[in-house]
Length: 307
Length: 251
Image 1 (cartoon, rainbow over the protein chains, first blue to last red):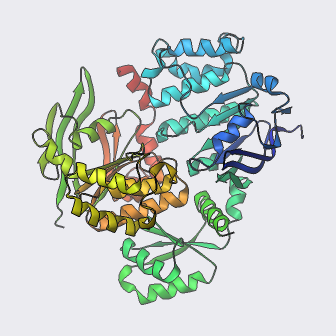
Image 2: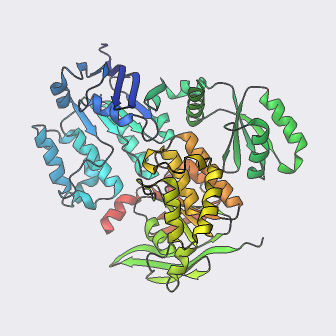
């Protein structure tokens, strides 16, 4: 176990009956950094979170949180972590203030004692402290849930899809808050289905069917993209997609509005230029572009499915 | 350009007590268009969608959907639209084919017609051989594709998609958008809400709602130019930022 890591996971597996929810998962999160776990529903994100927060036992492998063993030291871990589960964790019938006091009392502390920790976030919802949690908007609930997860001064914060179904404005604000928390030294593991949020993490990993396909710094994951990506603009996108897919096969040409993304090796450029010459009516403009993180994950998924 | 209007909204208001959820909405949606309906949580999108689907009546103003009036012909509207949401509209413990028969029946299709359309739909999706599988056993991405195809089973002129791509992997999400493009090309009008700002870029035109009003409506390209933004996310943030707290005060 390395002392620089807030979270360390080694070869973790977990099955439920025949379903392998986690397959030999390993990852490490440095203290005071944000690690983003990106993956679709059913990939195993929540299972991993529940093992790390000591709610499930792994079948095999080991995990450490704040240097403590997830199975042997579970009681100590529970005092030191904050957990915001994917489904809304608040008591709908309690007010904003009551929810917060409740969570503080569970951890034998008071809101007053740790107010400085949650101040920036909580102040935004304090005007509504007498409103029942069930009557808050999505963004407000999210802020309250985060305040509740922070009120006992955790060292490590687990946020399971905190931004799902939340609009772009609230998501932006939420990520600004996470950065502040990180700067105060808290280690954060956050899961999300939004690819663009991967870019906001210090490190990110993509999980699918229980396996972590790759972890790394977002920019270096993009650097590792195999081959070239071309962006093609056209006046007739749907027709162009059809013609190109016939030539190049499935999962090579993707449409983004009026723009197409095409993956391939460097010789693809020669092919595309020839295609442009032979189809003047499509008004094609071809550009070699840098892939996005989503393109990288798609490539990882495809190569993983083939192997 | 001669464009057939499928949704026409003018001076539309919806009030709940003293709260105005929809504040003078004016817009048109054309046939075969992919229309993105964006807004922050609580901006009034769902209220407007409910009116357009014939589930709620406006407080004032005019709206027609597929040529039918939202005040007087809501039943006609329901027959001529399809609806799909992220929260599934499929019955989990029925098989694929049972879901199709059930929905076909609701939309008043004859059994023979349902059989023909079911075969066509499932062959296109590559699911004909597993049509007797129970929905709950299927991956999320398949369920989404089935939901979307089911929403088109009765050949509606408009399909409403309410955050259709939540929680799926990026390949499935792109395949789903391929289905949307194909539907639009066949002449279906697609009215879609999403929190994925990259998906806003895929729409033909986008409207952005803030506090019950439509504050911007144009092609993604034009909106980015108008607000000198590099992406639709920037446009959205510029328009909708900091509005949420103000709204809470009104409520």
